[in-house]
Length: 381
Image (cartoon, rainbow, N blue to C red; front, side, top):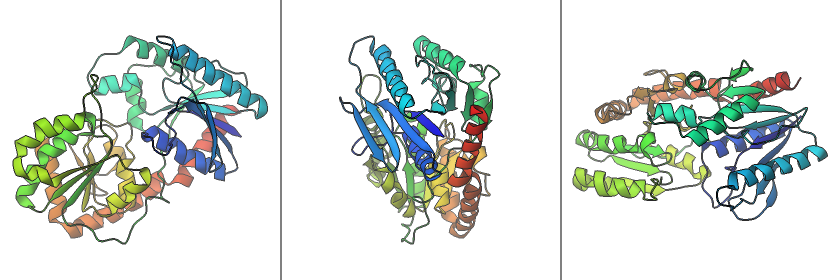
């Protein structure tokens, strides 16, 4: 079997990438270990064409078009030509991409096209209470019509995407994203008392502002508490920094204790486990997720984890049994949940152990990849 993933985010040293790139890298390398050929095609971070073999995965990065107003057309055309050339040499069975990826891609006979629902434009427009951009909405609808099948990364993203887009009676299956439990493992390191750790893009929808607003309430109970924030900055449409906004507007409101809120900036994916290992509690109060891998990644390291009770949160954590869920819009609730965890380290440790077992059952990479292969075989036959 030969599978091609469409993404511009495949991890490249020195460049930031999101959860989609991490997912593709994790699943691609495991598929290769199963003797499945994997290609990845997308636009390059650099203004050149580039092909690499990375741990058995063929990664082809295409130079981006700079034609104003028509870059989308030329980029799609070049991706299509690249796929056609690969297919002629090594026939593909499956092409998989996120929601918008098939909009302008020419379909090749005998290849099955799958959209994996990572959270597209319609999904996040609903979640964030904003309007649909007509151009992105058009592309997504066009892309969905071309798909032969769909994979949803959670029941939540499946049902809420269906509020706006039709699956056209094509096969659809819910398969969680796998976690890299070779990278995320329990570590024998000293836990820093009252270390509260967040990892993810520093932006509004990840709940960072509310976490900062919750911090003074935690400090009242635990004066030595430190809030560690790991992640890249997010920019507003005008190019201004979200972190700078927090530093200028939110941090002055809490006075001297703001010195105990540390922005570590973007760190490599391989460094995140070390950050989790030192934490007394990991907190991810997202306003919205399609699934959210940060929570299960920390859980598999046997860390006490607080996640959002919105969206797919309850699919990942049984509240009070394998972790904790909170309302990410309520700083007082975030704070009280953190205080609950820090006040009962023995109970937190017991729940963290159950959380690890739960994640190994739901997100273990070999099980997840086997489910994907089974679905691919069903679709291509």
